[in-house]
Image (cartoon, rainbow, N blue to C red; front, side, top):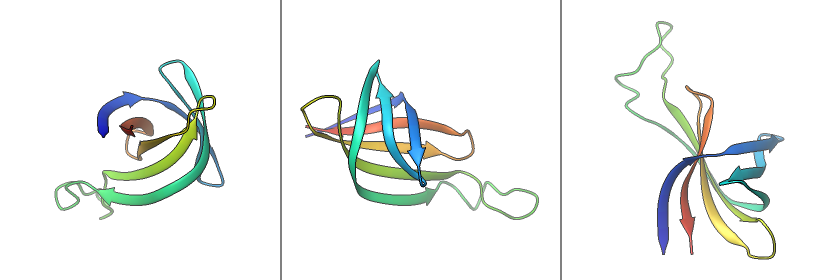
Length: 91
């Protein structure tokens, strides 16, 4: 089962990949990246004056653990606002 959140998280990145994140006061260590993809939202409406699209979002589906329990989490990085969110959690 998937739960949707949208909670802000602090993420540590190494070599362009998330390695740790804090969600609701708990530190999670990323064990492995399961999927990574990039999307742009409404790219045809959001253009910089130089023609580059805005609204790019990176999604990282990771296997992570705060202790012994391993879970699957989807992190979203919004390049325009330089923010990270926890979008989904799989039970």
